[in-house]
Structures are given as structure tokens and as C-alpha cells.
Image 1 (cartoon, rainbow over the protein chains, first blue to last red):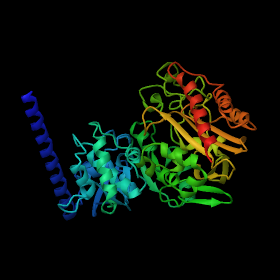
Image 2: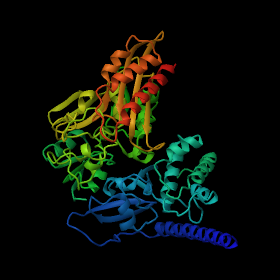
Image 3: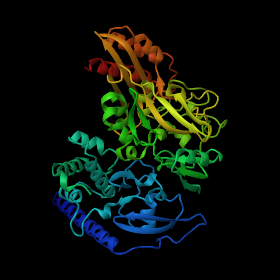
Image 4: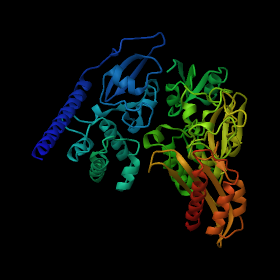
Length: 207
Length: 327
């Protein structure tokens, strides 16, 4: 019994440290992002049908040479190197790839990067201001609203979109309007609590 | 995914001129259905014409009715004040469909044209008469729990997956279409086709024709309307059975009725006989039950979806009862 308890504590410690590392990593990335203007795609492979596509992500313009069939998700992860946005099902069913385009949450896996050359794109890396977490990020940490963390960037971007939309008033409405984000660990109760926290202090939550 | 060339169109006539001459070209609107199917190699257009810049996003009064631009997003329509007040069934149907992210992307025109969720259609390892005409239909002998009980043929029993279209067909919506030769109007009830011998032909649209708007006429029953969707999980799932219901009731007597079903038909399914049976009847349980029985009278259930017959009857009765109780 004692052993079990110890293991649990150790597990909790590990989770906490992973969370802290994850958060500090994406804060660092967000900072690096605003400083470096990348003009060369990370992936160097090219085919004759590539086109120049400029994406404005988290306030930085990125010039990419990509094919029209590259999804916004793949452009963010594989060409720009912003790997905070996750690829889950890649078919619009899980919500892990959720980003904000002109303040609206969308599934970045079901849209082509080339369609968004005039848009303002915000990913999980763009939510924090330096070392200051976005209120939704802070609420997710405070409420322990994740376990493995894989769906978390999508959950947070989706929740920020939900706040921008302004239609959720009750916990039931939060659940309904977060239904596009699946959490395999089942962290739903704490996600609802985190989103409710931000809704109650609404003005801090908009991007 | 197969490679394709990409162009943006700023005006409807330019878009039509780009797509119409090329049989392998396709319009790209919200992309939520098309890109999904392109990843599966179910759809393989060689040229995409992005119509997102088209100025077709307005939702506005036209006469006593409403015109909805084909590029209005599902979210914009669902939360539009005119739609919520005058056509609640449409707002409810849209909000019961997909997820908020998908609703932000998906357009009205694209929603009408979305393809079936039949697993055999979506998997190129299987034959499918809709995808490869003449290759066969594994769903009829296979796992057909999600398939149609109404409007099927011996070639295809795939359902049309839209919620929005079910509400619109109940509201007598009219589709405005632009082609090379100008514009034409098609009532939504005639827009989708039952599979018959040609399940690959799903609508009356000719190649290159573009949906530019959907018109909703004014009618006395539209305010007293409701969408009820039954699905496998509480949210974010396709309908096992859904019902769009609208009633014009005066002094407890039904003067006009509209009833359409989703998740059970090979197209958004309007129950015309059941509607007729409701007229001049008291708005009570007995009338609703009689209408429900008529609505599924022609059902041909398959091995795994026989439950949909009883489920649909109960969904109809509950939806009509809810509408009957509305002020």
C-alpha cells in the first residue's frame, strides 16, 4: 500500500514537471517565433508544383515554397516548425489541430495553407505574452485540465475561440461547444472548470 | 493526396468559367468534406477553384423570406438573429451538426453537397457503386447500421448526412444555381436524387454549376418549428435519426405541417404523406403517432438498422409534441 502511494506521488511529480517543461518550452518557442523571420521551409523536398505562400502566424510572416495540397496543419508543423499544434486524426474528428484564423477556431487539418495567405493565424505558441501565460493556459494549469497533454493545445485554442464567440453561458453549453475536441484521458470535468473560470473573468480571455 | 492545381476566384462568373470546361476541376469552399475525401483518395480533382473570396456570405431579408448566401458559414447562419427568430428549426439543425470548428469552416452550399458517411464509400479498398459505378454495394450485405431505410435501391443505401438540409427541405427552401448559361432555381426537395440505378448522381447540378444562394420563403409554420436529433453520443455525431418538424396550429387544429427526416433516407427526406395526414387534425399524441406511422410506412430496413424504424417513429412523435407545445 505504501509502495502504491509512493508511486502515485512520483507519478504526480513527473506529470507536474512535464507540464512545467511543456509550458516553458512553448513560451520559449513563442518568443523565438517573434524574433526570427523564417524564409526557408524546414522541409527542403520540393516538387515542380510548389508555389510561394506567405503565412502570418503569431505576428510573424513566413514565406514558404509549398504545394497547394499542404494543409495548414502540415505547413505549421513541418514547414514552419511550430509543433505545438498537434496532428491527431487528420480528418477533422478530434480537434487536436485546432488553431485560430482571424480569431475563429478551425481544424487546421481540413484546410490548405494556400487558402490563408490573407489571414491572421494564431497557434498555441502565440497565445502567451512572453512569460505571461494566456488566461486560458493559466486556467488549464490551475485546474489541472489535462493528463497526457496531447489534445491540450487544441483544447486551449478551441476554448479561446469559444470565449471569442460568446455563446457559452452554462457548463452544459461549454460541454456542447467544446465537443469538437476529444480528450482520450478524459480530462473533461477539469477542462469545463478551466473554461468556466476564464468565462467568468471574460475580458482577459480574448486574443 | 493527389496533387492538384489551385486558383482563387473573386467573382461567381469567373469561378464557373474556370470549373465548367474541366471535368476534373472542382470548387473548394469550406473544404471540410472535400479535403477529408481527398486525403482518402475518394475524391481526386486535378484542379481546385477556391471560391472563398466570392461575395456570397450575406444573410438578408428578401421579400418576406430570407436569402442565405451559399458561402455563409454554418456558424453564421446558425447564430443569425433572423434565422433564430423566424426559422428556429434551421438554427437548431445547424448547431446539432459537426463541431464548432467545422461549423466555422463549412458553408451552406458545401453542406448541401457533402458526401455520404457510408464506410464503404469512404474506403477505396471496397467496391462502391457511388464511387465506382457498377462495382457493387458491400453495404447491402455488410455492416449497415448507419444506412438508409428510406429511398434505397439495390445499388445503394447510403444516407445523406446533412442536418441543415433536413431543416431546409422542411422549410420549402429553394436553391439558386449559377451556370455558364445563367441562373436557375431548384426547390431543395427536387435538388437531391434518390440513388436508383445511378447512385453516383447525387444532385441535379450539372458539372460547373455553382450554388450561389438558398432562399427560405415566409410561411406561417416556420416560427413554430424544431429539430430533434438522436445520435450515438451526446454531441458531435451524425444522426441515427433526426426530425425537422413545423406546425401551424390554430385553435388546437393543425392548419399546415412540415416533416422531414435525416439519418434514415438516401436524401434529406420529406414525409409528404404524413404532413397531409396532420392537416385539420387536432394537435395531439394520436395525430402525431398516426403521422409517424405514415412517415416510415415505406421503410425497407437492413440487417443491422431495423431499429431505425421504431426510433424514427418515436423521434417524430417527440419532435411534433415539442412543436405542439410551443407558444
